[in-house]
Image 1 (tube, protein in one colour):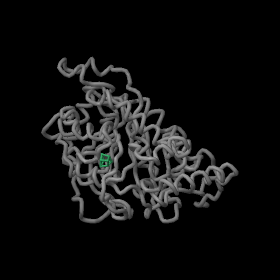
Image 2 (cartoon, helix red, strand yellow):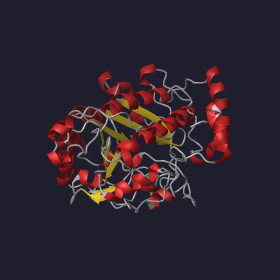
Image 3 (spheres, rainbow, N blue to C red):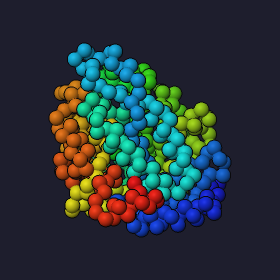
Image 4 (cartoon, rainbow, N blue to C red):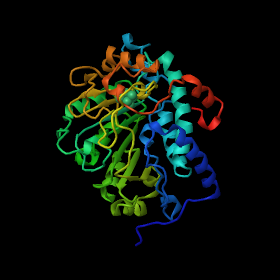
Length: 396
Ligand code: SF4
């Protein structure tokens, strides 16, 4: 069996897009990864095609869309009704994100990413500005075990010994999911943050618990594929998983044999829900809120919006809630679900203060934000901003 599909994706359109993209990138490269541009390997079998990677797909999943119907209000205590607005976005997690993954497979990703991301980021900022005090998260990220078996050079979690191996107590997990059940949560429940979720042997059991408690939610697992095999994939899907993302981090963007086997043998009904990406373990992404081993902290904060604290809540194994998914060490602790209700943390003064500041393009309300180069909709200042406004490909 040939494990190395070799069909090229080059086309005349690619050359045109690429030229524009190079011009684009050369002017504004400051906030982008350098190596995550091209992928030339594709599976010969169309339906088994892995996706191209721009190194930023996790970021693209976090943009919000208009609020879903407020069916959750009926189950809320009277004093909380009126505070809640849009209990997650099932439309986003069920349709927008898979669509984006598919589009990224067929066009030069950073070109698309630059143009779409910034426009959506701008839209998100304007959407959140009047509603953020009442809007709840669209994504709940849970780190049920803190460690990772990867060795990616861009990731602080792969540095041995820095993060202790903690397992989320079952009671905390159940407590969080039961709270989501109470509000009929219909957004995304991701059983991972910066860890490798397959290292937690309870994963299928957890997926099954979430599925039963929150039938309208989208349950997602993202893995590096090292521990994945056909049986484990089937077990997760049978437990009720909605989406399995496999990021294969290798030096040459090649298949992991076990993932290739899955690509060939997983039944179609499950393969449709599986997203396989070629990535590089020496990639240079954002500076991961200043914690990346291969990219420095910013010395000056950028003036930019960031949507992450508006749409995601991140809970680590001990129950601590961090600022965003890039808060690797949960150093900006916003609360603890072992002691507080999820919604009281979400609407707590500290998170609202950070949001207020970000809406003003100010990243100084939290220490992590001051050193973070995560791109967001930037405040345009000076003559260059006027130039950018009138050049469509440079305008975001
Ligand atoms: S700007 Fe702040 S909230 Fe946004 S990704 Fe960076 S650290 Fe997280």
